Amino acid sequence: MKTTYLICLPFAGAGASFFKDWQALAPEGLHIVPVQLPGREERFIDAPHTEVARAVEEAYSATLGQLAGADQVAVFGHSLGAVLAYELAHQLAGTQGVSLARLFVSGSPGPWNGRESRATGLDDEAFLAQVREFAGYNHPALEHPEMRALLLPMLRADVEMHENYRPSSDKPLDVAITALRGRDDELVDSALIAQWREATTAEFAPAELDGGHMYLADGAEALLQLIAAELGTADAR
Image (tube, rainbow, N blue to C red; front, side, top):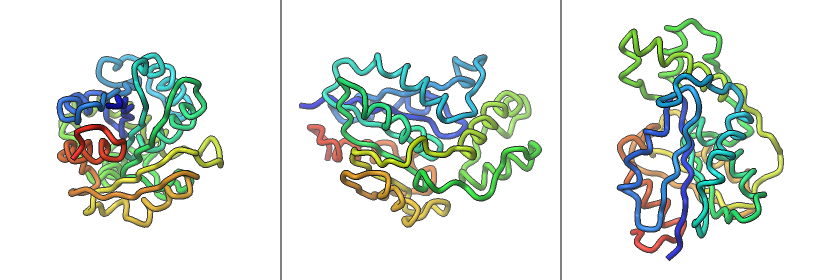
């Protein structure tokens, strides 16, 4: 049975703890490797990144030493995490000793298609309203003034990082890509998901799961079963 390490990149405002329950839900042979970026959770005092290239450089260094024992590696990211995952996949694909099997991108247009409307630079209320519109989701902690004050700098940095993102290369990956969305997602439709076809010279597979833009918050088990099936782990069903 193959052992696959699934590197998981966070969406804007999220930390590694979002993925903490995934290992218990994952089919046998799938090992979850969450990436903790600065400015959140136990790394709260560290300055958050505002550039994708810097975030990916750190994610690459942090995860490379955790991949020993993997027969193959896959990368997953949702929204902001999708472009982080795409850039990380470019680095891993050129790394000796790493067998990169597949990239899973979720809830995101293709990497060459940036967002037209922006939240960066808006005052707090307008910023949060725009983020709610982008994400189709409001973190409950943002309703509490003290928590909002703590979370806003990290969330602003994440949004700036996403809005200013430009791909590091116009060269597509030679790695299979699965592009996912919630079938009720009103923010990212199937045409936007299909843009990822241009990001690979290998196999491309679009996929939909039950739910809206944040389908993965309540549908992690179904998502992990799909990932395991695409990767060929033993007990995916």
